[in-house]
Image (cartoon, rainbow, N blue to C red; front, top):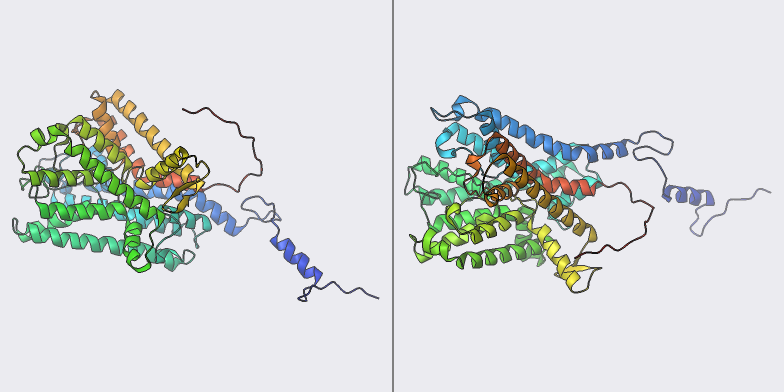
Length: 500
């Protein structure tokens, strides 16, 4: 008599159950190969994307800088009698693409209208493109968005809780809609800013000239780029009209929106509907407010600032200029103050504020507010004896996020220190002034103590490299940390290390 196969209570045979179990058990395979040694297409594509994604970002932005350099070298890009070297063109292109604002030339007087349009396009691509193009480049690596790429894009946009357009990552439409959303929001905000500035400036300038200046400065402000067309142009100073409250208010709003990023802005708008804010948004807003208040306190206590530097302004103008300077210092680089004339206490505060920068996945640079916020949360947890869990706003910060924050802060600090030392060897000057320029370049802030114009070709190249790394570095580090192989089964014994 033949023995029938055993069947479970739901009618499944033992052969089926064994097959199902075999399918569910982990298979020890070489990465990128199937169990029989044949290459796995999906695994191979995934491995390829992980290896090439950071390179695509670097090559893409380097290519944009190269094109910008070639265009700025055209005779039509400069005014008659102005000669631009290859290094100066490359430096200007890098500063525009990285939305920094440091320059060795005067945008208003050295470049023609055609050259100014080139700079405007470069900083627009550098600002908007850093977000939108990052998403599109990751998607264009393969036919589908892998889990690793999904994690990377989520991290670059501020965390796990994202706005609705980021939920369907596996479809091309989801990613395309995300990029489209970023572009539409950016262009809409810039259009509103242009209109508001034009309405004010057309009363002082011809309508066409006022429109061009409004467009350029609205884009420069929202992209936190730091380029302006008033220095040396003969127009009234500082965005046209000195300490004009209306102009400073519009500029400040554009800078804040650009520095916060689309994800944070959307989360804030959505709060009125769902009454919830992501932890990333709360950290960003909280630290932004803290930096604003602390910066104002430092500058208000600086007697030299008000008795000497701003002595010619009224009290209201002094306060308005102070508020704008603190807002702009973290990454925008637009300023009314002659920074080389303020006290070193204010300069030191501005240096720290530039290093911190703005929100991740925004127009801002620096180590980002979320990195500093996570480190502060971890330090507070350690002080309270909660070494195993860092909690803020009723949410715990993952250990993996803390490790990334430590890595970003460590590498960024080492880079700034190393570049400052090398720059001091290449150019004679005050070490603080050199360090200020380096931090400004790394944070894509654009503030300067007037030393950038004095740098030789090697110094300019080093600052250009720092601007480039500062714009791509934090995202590249996150990518590198996220691209881990499968966890090792080997656990090594722990051994304490003496700290402090």
